[in-house]
Image (cartoon, rainbow, N blue to C red):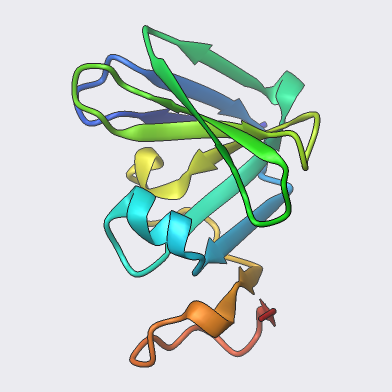
Length: 131
């Protein structure tokens, strides 16, 4: 079984994920753009029982466009968001793919909120695309 470790920049917040993610996605929503400071967010979803979270962290809760609330865990020292849980997807933990710092991480299977995608961005044709 694959074991992966995601961390914040300073290493104080650590997420251990066992097994393969059930979904890897790219999100172009404005909230992800603001959260990452990039043109999109890339995240991997794991079952709650496959994830262990260690270290001190702070939490920020935000309601999305659908009305469900996501609770983001970030390091109180370096400020990096590492993972979150959403009321809209119970039983799962979503982990920022960049926190794994692994260029071999599986590619996204889906791209969402593409109506907000930056015009210069090109993604693989073989993934699902949703506006």
